Amino acid sequence: MMHVDQEVLPGVEERGGAAPTETSRGNGDGAAVVVRGLRKSFGGQTVLDGIDLTVKSGETLAVLGRSGTGKSVLLKLIIALQCPDSGSIRVQGQEVTHLDLEAMNEIRKKMGFLFQHAALYDSLTVEENIAFPLKRHAKMADSERGDRVKALLSSVGMEGDLKKMPSKLSGGMQKRVGLARALALEPGVLLLDEPTAGLDPITSGEINELILKVQEEYDMASIVVTHDLHSARTIADRIALLHEGNVLIEGTFQDLEKSDNGFVSEFMKRDS
Amino acid sequence: MSHNPSIPHRLISQDAPQAPSFARATFTSVWGPINGFLEWFGELGLFAWQVLRAAIRRPFEGRELVRQFDEIGSKSLPLVALAGAAIGFVLALESRSSLVRFGAQSMLPAALVYSIIHETGPIVTGLVVSGRVGAGIGAELGSMKVTEQIDAIEASGVNPYKFLAFTRIVACILVLPLLTLAADFCGVLFGWLAETLAEPISFQRFINQGFVGATFRDFLAPTFRTVVFGLIIGMIGCFQGMRTQGGTAGVGRSATSSVVLSSLFVILADVILVKIILVFFS
Image 1 (cartoon, rainbow over the protein chains, first blue to last red):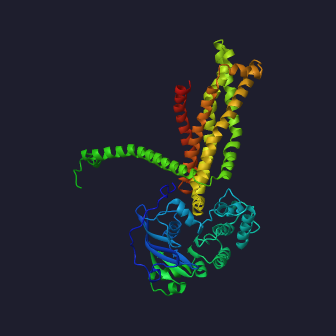
Image 2 (image 1 turned 90 degrees about the vertical axis):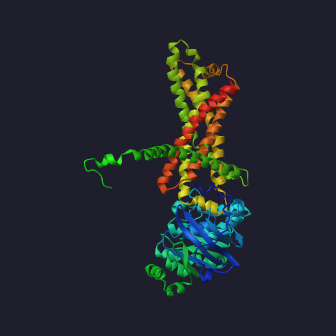
Image 3 (image 1 turned 30 degrees about the horizontal axis):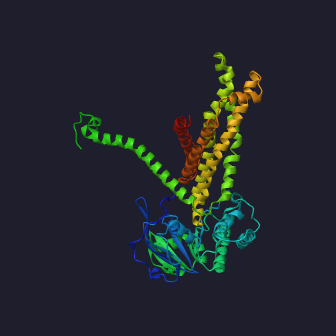
């Protein structure tokens, strides 16, 4: 079932796991998202074993790794859809691992989340999907909200599809609407879970361009989980490669290409 | 392990030291379902607490509540009315032959009205709604769960316990008594129709005979019993839906379990509430 124990998330005392990489060290001053010693296991299986990451405002970090290495779990922990076993997550300076639901919802308003399959509300039209967070969190008149929805849809190239139901949209169109919904409250942090998964190369390219455009427009910190190395190279400033529950390497795309680590070389070779 | 080849291996493997493991296996097979049942109840209690906590905080999701009134109330009305009409018609036909045998056919309107208002109307409405609405809520929320739509609601800073569960539970609670009234009315109307086909009687006379000696209390307690049925149907449908796991197969399981469990608990609640009503309202 849903996490009914979410009201008070577990406190964080211990640090642990692998030693942080050079780029993730430091206290994270001025950073939009700081993750320290994050651990998460399911049953007896440890998925994240002491992750350390820092993402600054205006920066895009791509998180790569094999299937099942906990990339999507990392995003869900940052937005508190799941509870960590231990570790610290700070979003815009605020620790989120032991907030109550009300306080967490305030933080969530500062974050946008694009789900892997867009997760549009299938009983609502495209327009209503985008208006959903605005209706609940933004104090604005109906006409103003309507204009905002149209502007958001226009920014993702979907201005003509206001009244369509999500089931009538292609995968790429759903991702665009999902992105517009994630941007509705002008978040400071954008979390993107496999934004190009299941899309053809042309649509993937369009989504990548769209992400670059919105990053430029909104100047926010982004964390992109992806398998798509081409996408990571296009949209990310830095890349973190997860392996066996830890950040194996973190750096620019060129840093990863130059790495002499066997797994990194293999990963870059297979995906390219 | 070496053993005498003249003794079958099967006999060696079933010797005395196996007895404790047999007892343990028996205990596990008995305790497992009991433990699962208790866990289910514990989780249901936590879920109800979350919904209650969400209910007392703003915003109150009025628009979604109205939408659920329409989904759960208006769209269940034809089925409930049809079920009520069928029950009234059949009850009149069946009762007539019995009452004629004892020379008490003049009692038919009273017997019919009493039976429908006291028991048949509420329980038929409860079971029909648990079938239609329980399955609908379980499948809809289950589908939203496996497609991450509930996560998306939560990620956008909205409490899904309020937006999804509270609105549906309140709609079920408020709509059930109204649907029961519709089932009662259709049952009495079609009971009269069945009676008048056999022996013509005016509707006014039928009603006068039917409600002779009846008080408002006879009508009120059984109808408001369905408030509890609404609570059960809404709560179990939402709970089963929001704990769905395992893709589309999980959605099917949630829909089925919502119907089965809500029907079961409606029947159990009916038995308990009838006893309570007899004690306090007779």
